Image (cartoon, rainbow over all chains, first blue to last red; front, side, top):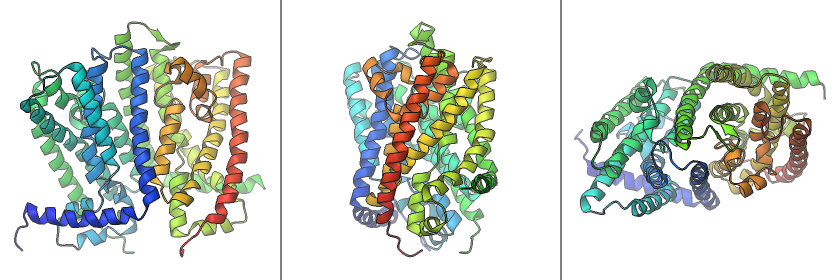
Length: 267
Length: 269
């Protein structure tokens, strides 16, 4: 079998995507309500944020607009996991019912095929919300707009998104070993709420844990420092892209290990 | 209905919940990590504010409030919306409707077992850890008794909110969407995301009369002796609010369900 290039996979992805969107369109009410729900969660996060700053002027030396930037950054960074990797949430049901076996019989990468099956349109609302927040904070802080800064922003947004994808891959793949592991995903998904706060608040051993083991510090804090404090960027921010790739690769390997371990329920 | 029979449903639920022991430990472990996150975040927030007490809430109060709100959330979470839409899809709901017992009652009692297990194995350990971390800042006395009563009321109110929302899925074919809207509204307006004491004056006034507050804010305020619950009249006010909403939601939920159940169409099963 010859090696398949990126083009082959891009082509397949496009075909599956079109089918998925067609099937979603047949449930129009669901689509409208889900989009509304997504906007509600973002609004609720925003309201919480406003209430917090209504009572406290700064958090750990971060003022309102810097925090807003961080918040917008985290929203955009969390979009890819929402749009492209949403099928992780169905993994445990498929593994339990035995439907997962169909993915193993196709001559394409199992991980790719599984993820490509769902494209979550709702995530786009979050993306728009996040970009709006970043632009607003950007103007208020007065960061200069140059091609280099924009390029950096995009690079580090992509970097940041890798971490959340990796966390969710790890969490979802636990279902190959643990029955009823839905909790793990729900919990990990809740940790992302803390990504929007500066990670400098953590101390001691927990700083290490939230940086290297459950890397929520990399979802927004370290990558956004590259833009916010260009004169004083910590080393961890610069190595974030590399670290993100490694982390993503490990999560992929873990996921695939689960697939190999998967023994069919036989129904 | 014979209470013994109801308790046998609870027992079945307990056994079912204990089957997923690992999940319980994971929940407990996650509560503890959450405790760490909340601790550092609010420590930093209070350190920046320069004063020890903001809107009548000290750092310790806020921490206890938010962590126990999360623990209560895990304990009250019922997944009625998810379970109902799945059993409609698979047709299982027909079997439940045919049972010689009212559906709403049966559903409620089938969840109680899980509540008991979650309360004993996740809520109480979390509570103990919070006590240790805050060096016994939770007042110990009659308020514990009132807290438990308020929590049971909260559980009933939460169940009625769930049962109001679940049938909407029958009409819209949207489970995730309905559920996320419900969860977002409940978590924000009940004080589980940020204590209601921090809300701006006007917003707090409106929120204090809504049913969502009865789920998280009232039990936690009673536990901490806030919102006037340290006086008899204040305490009675809070309980009266819970009772009023419980009655309204039970009646409304019953009417809505009786209407919705006629609309169920099950394909196969």
